[in-house]
Structure formats: structure tokens, C-alpha cells
Image 1 (cartoon, rainbow, N blue to C red):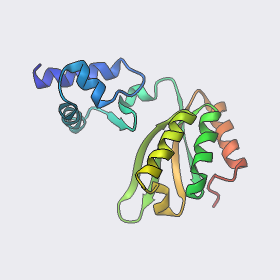
Image 2 (image 1 turned 90 degrees about the horizontal axis):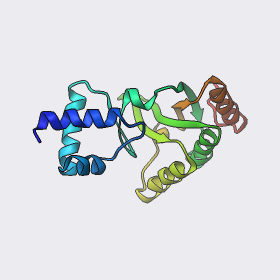
Image 3 (image 1 turned 90 degrees about the vertical axis):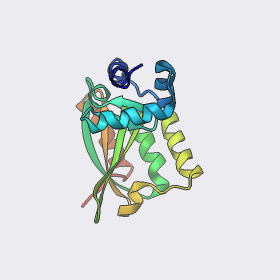
Length: 172
């Protein structure tokens, strides 16, 4: 398959999905290697196509937020409280889309998360532990933002209240 047609196929496949697809899955669908898909996605992004790389795979920006209420919350807590925060969001019907911190040198740093269940939260925490990686929020003393996607504003407000009750929201 010609490279241009393959990249068009990637966009077409992702536009029909409402969940992320891994590079391995896309590679199998298009009969190429995973490395080819990774390169194609990089070229698509460079050309302005809003392909998001999440821990679960690739998704188009427009497809990831279709028919959802999206809001941001400022949080402040220790690394040990991260799992509690993630559970509070997903247990109340939300998805933790990303984490954002303000770095004094680099400005805004954003990590895509796409955590929508306790299973996702557990996998994320296991990966942090197994790779001995630091959370982005550790760069800012625990202060960070999350983009939350959910069914409606009422759900968002319920998530915000739960996080506030747990003492995990940032208070100036």
C-alpha cells in the first residue's frame, strides 16, 4: 500500500473508532510493522491531523470528546494519594483525560492519560511503580490540573465535590 493511502487509511480507521487503537492493532489491520505506523502517525501529526497518543493507543482529538462535557480541575496532593484521586473521578462517571503541570522552564507540560475505569487507574499506577517513574505532579509539589470528560456538567460537579470532600482539590 502506498504511504499516502496508508496514512489516509489510518485517519479513516481512527475516525470510525471511539476508543484508542494501539500501533500494533493498526499495523495488523494495514499489514505493516508497528514502526511504520508510529512513523505515519508522526507525519500525520506534523501535517496538522489531531492524532492523540494515549497509553491505550491512538485516537483522533475530535473522536475522543464527542458528546461529552469537558472541564478542568486543579488538584494538590501527594503521590500516595494519586490512586484515590483517580478512583474518585472514574467511580463518579468521569474520565481523566490528561494531567497538566506548569514547569518554570518548559511552561505547560501535558501527559495524556485516558483513565476511565479502576482497571485503567490500577494499570497506570502499576506502570509508574514498575518503571520507577515520577508523576508529573511531583515537578510542582503536587499541584496539577486534570482535564475531565464526563456525560454532563452535573456529573462534573459531582466529581469536583468528591475530590473536594477528599481534600484533593487545590485551594489557594
